[in-house]
Image (cartoon, rainbow, N blue to C red; front, side):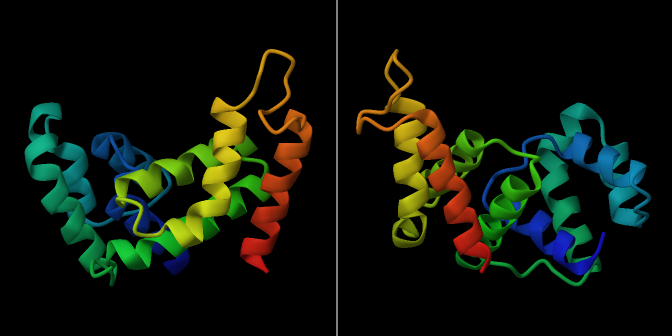
Length: 157
């Protein structure tokens, strides 16, 4: 992993976007990462990982030169990462908007000004689509998805 990927990993962790630490350790090891803390994280029993895993992951992040990212620092990193994933085609527009809506909720709406456009598009895509595949604003799904892509490009510009 390069420095940016490690920062994204830490941001996802700070924002509670990582649920399965054992699967994370498995993926990192399969990708060729090698660190004592990572091996310990993978070796934890499924019952132990719930209790001990977070501390071991924090140790791993520190070993990699991180570990000091705040939630406030993590939000813009996550937004940029989601925008990159969307433009790379690895996440759908509705899922990108929903992920950022979840982050907005988990951070108790402290970052709403930065996340508001994503949240509005999420509302339109997830909860506002009617049976005729038009949003409550009368826009087609394709029109709303176009706006999600435009927002991602704007985020990265």
